[in-house]
Image (tube, rainbow, N blue to C red):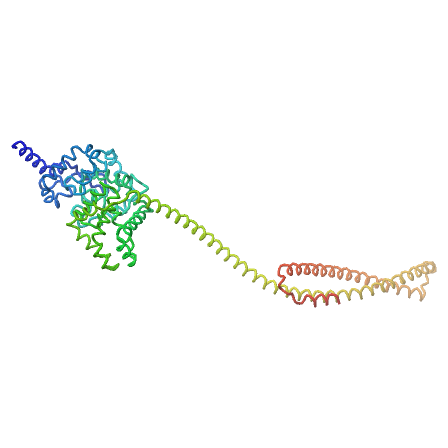
Length: 528
């Protein structure tokens, strides 16, 4: 009996000193928002300062000795317990992990305790990240009232920056998403930054948080879809009330999945939710959410959308701050069918694929419609230009018809003048022939009389007639020149008339609906 009492007292002493030992074993925190400088922070008592030291020390010391003893035994045989007694581990986690052990238990639960990423972490925080500006902007908004994070350029904000930046370098596809800062903050309150980074990587990869934080956030939509189906099946009255009020699931549940309640619930409650999430995964998170909705159903049914928002933001966190055990009890009793959740995931994937195909078709149709509208605008502009050209063509055609009419009149006058000139030329030619014959006769007569050298009156008359013949010859030359010029003018006019007729046929072919006036009168005038 004395041996048992001594053993129990020894275990009790070990349990009481366990939080202090864990605190003393914590490594120095790092703060390098701009430079990779590492340094440790000491409390007034000379012990390393951790986030839980100033605010949660009393709570840690008040934990029952039996709880620490039970957890100490579990952790000392962790591999055996996880493989052989997983239900026992799950039940202990649901009851709550002692705050002093929480950081270590989280690492054991997710398998990050001996992660090789600890050695890679110093290199990552020294690497530049494209997200640094966004991270620096948002860390001041993460737990701004908490003593560990409230000081600008303090240890808390420095380590928060380091871990988020390191992950943005480690996983460039995800980079940085605002909600992840709250998860990192929760982790940093329980463990040094290297270990927090390793746990964060595990949560992202093994717990599918990475899919939620991807730029498309498609996984968040899946969570909303699964939650709606759970709500419709298990709480149909509340689901109908939400539908009637237009209160969509994303309006109250998005932050629950993005920050694991860290941005909504008080820290102690958020720690309990993180316990369940790391232990049971997303199914455990769904259990907690359904338990919260089930316990809040009566109040929610009495509220409209505006007051439901206020309830989720303020009243509900205050209500369950000191009563998380009741939520965890209801969550433990709630059953989530993994097969059904997988089926819902497949349904959601099919719906999203169909939506993606429809969206692609819509984008294609919009592109075609835009191109068609551009083509219509071009055709309308072309039609307007053609109309302007048609009007201009009609005006030009009218002017050409007037010119043709004037040219035809001039041609008719020229032809008449040519006819008269030709007649005069013929008459002149006949007269020239007569005079030539007469000249020949006179020349012969003169040649006979030359020898006598006696010019008679007849000779004088012959000389006079020769002068007249010369004058007629000169006039004949001028007439021939005039005839040649008139013939050339007539030829040019005929060419112009031919070209104008050809243009008329082209215009009549191009604009068959246009009636060209003046054509018939011009042709009649030309015929005349």
